[in-house]
Image (cartoon, rainbow, N blue to C red; front, side, top):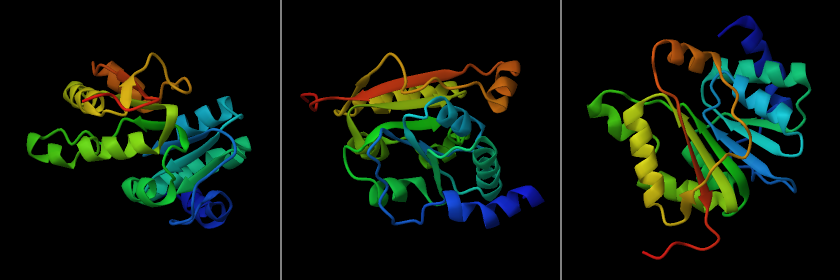
Length: 202
């Protein structure tokens, strides 16, 4: 935690932060980002889409501090932050069929096989995310781990409320993390899914 990040948590979180348990709603399109990291992607997309409201969910203090500093420097009035577990935020703070999009960019891949059970994307979480999307809402995931990409694709395709989509709610900018992965030869894969108007027949 740098001094600037700590100062942002102390001084800016009261301005941009949302207490856990407070309902998240907006009269405009509402987008939830799960795991905003250091916040560069979050801030860039929020700046590019001033017509929508964005909520970043993150537990890592330095990342939140970095995002808060970006939000303040760029004057992002359409961005809020929740420092809490994403699954609990989805379950307890967001009404069903209320999100225009969910962004899940480069979640922890837990690369060792014995740790795969810790990965966020699994059947019950996919069902939860799909339920929170409004009909036509977009789930946009990205990863640089091929086996995780295959797992996510399979899980999302198996969810009756979701169908493949061609594009996301907003264009995802390239991050420093992603550029480093590309230099190391990691293939980047973006997955797009849409909440169906009606559930698919089983």
